[in-house]
Length: 633
Image (tube, rainbow, N blue to C red):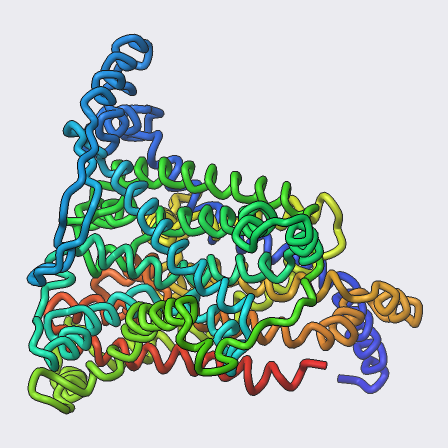
């Protein structure tokens, strides 16, 4: 190149670079919108279209078949079949209510253990719940169990001071990122016939008892409480610490007893938080999948599990219809939650400053009924929350005869001698790590861009934020079906071309879509709290919007970015619902999928693989503690 042309080339490069910097944020926003349109809205739209098409023609036959089938909607099938026969339906309801009776009885809830428990028996005429009814029923029971286990924790954390209180409160975040399939394996290790609980009971001559086989629904409900009771506790603790103590003191000064002051002053202030936690729990457990699949199978099939089964049976039209109905219900519940949260946002108060009481100030107080009740609750926490995870680790190195390494030896043997069509441990570990890193590369930029666009955009930003949070309201199975039927199978294009996204790319896309909202939720509050004057000063000094973002804003919110990245990696490592659909019979399976495949044949290797998954998931949070802490100011 002649020397005379070099200055011109340098000027062209500088000009191009300057233009890219000026428009970098807009280009990133357009790229993010394109990714969301292709990888999120298109797959969800494919599911919706699949439900209303039959051989390429619009039809509502799928919806009619589902809504009039007692298997799906139970007793409501007659209502949907004849919606105008109101009088007949009301007569049926009145007759059913008239046949309800309540009686006192004694039950023995633990199989094989003669432990009588007084109970009120509710006798009702036979009524068929259907698939949707059972899903709502187990979600309601799971919500009650979560509230029952979460409220005592909120009371202890908000009222008493003790060593480790702050750590315990911080650890309530862990259940939200633990893979569901891993929790299911932990519950097998804890409550199975050869599990930890039966082992402890055997020391005193009891058992073994078939906790899972005898009452799988109860174990599923307890597993759901493992996830959601900490959510209820976390939400309620914040409200409990914000209780207006002056109102309580005023009530006491007017002669109210402690119990009356609690009922009339504290409970009304806690109720919104408890209702919020309960509503969120119902939404999450209504869309449950891996726990029910692993612990209950098709015997306790929820809508999500049945959709998965329909896909495996290639009944795509039926699966799409169920997916649409489930999505509409979950969106309705999510909308109700958002409206209620918005209505309560104006009632927020600053945290109370009243000092907490020591949990164990002296021996006499430690033996009081209230403290003994707290100790009893602590034992329940050990069984329900600590037990499954500890049993997972212990179960991987023990069997009925004591310590053993054969579970890990099986995994090693399978890796060295297994056929290509079998599930190989190293491939599952490798895929999980690679998909996790790839998910970070996609989800973190998407989450940051959405945060930047919505942080100070007013009403328009709120609309964009709501649209971008769609993955929180659409289940992984529904999203996986959309990817499978749309991008994986291919979308016809003019000229005989097909647009396809398959294999590892499809799985990474599914993981990134599931993970980026958590990046946004971590970064958006920090960006919104930054002083706009800093950005304006940088712009006044000649910096482009991209340069101000890179040099001023992002360093100040780096801790949120790192925390969101850790969540994104952990979510990718543990994602199961869409991965199990997209992996199929190929070699793109991950650790959670491998755990599920081993679980159906050998519980020991499944527990060993689950332990590996546990440590890999936990290791991702080292980023928050080691790297994220460097950015905190």
